[in-house]
Amino acid sequence: MPEIVYDIVLFLHSILRYVIVVAGVGAVALAIRGLLTRAPFTALADRLGFVYATSLHTQLLVGVVLYGFVSPLTQAAFANMGAAMSSSVLRFYAVEHISIMIVAIIVATIGRVFVRRAKDDAAKNRTAAIFYTISFVLLLVSIPWPWNAEGVARPLNPFYMFGE
Image (cartoon, rainbow, N blue to C red):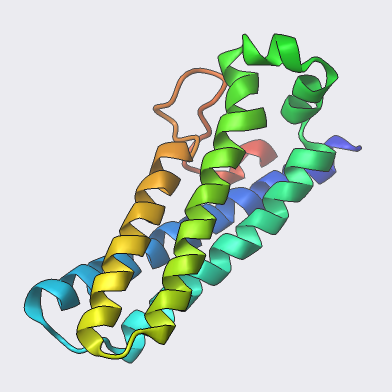
């Protein structure tokens, strides 16, 4: 696979990270605020929950393309999984990152369904606060932030791969 394809898919994956973080912060903040103040579950809270869950699913699709087809890291891991497990970088991308992210997506999706089915505003806020917060914490733990270990870390600037 040409390197430019990898760069483009990785760039999309990096850009979507910011959509998810912004929507996640908003969804969690509004849910916790609603829970603590007994405020109504607003249309904005519902919309942010929708954007959070939908952007997670979009990110999963882009991530699957990276994971299975274009990432040299996962290709190297798949070539020798035994050796990959002894490399913190290959293990992170081949196993840890995708596993934790899938759990985060599942938790957010279940939360979204339960929020939609909840009977009153208090139940909606409580459910959103619990599920979106758990999902968001899992997500934050598994993002390859710049302060992560060398080889795992990715710059905050998603344009880094294009020579800025």
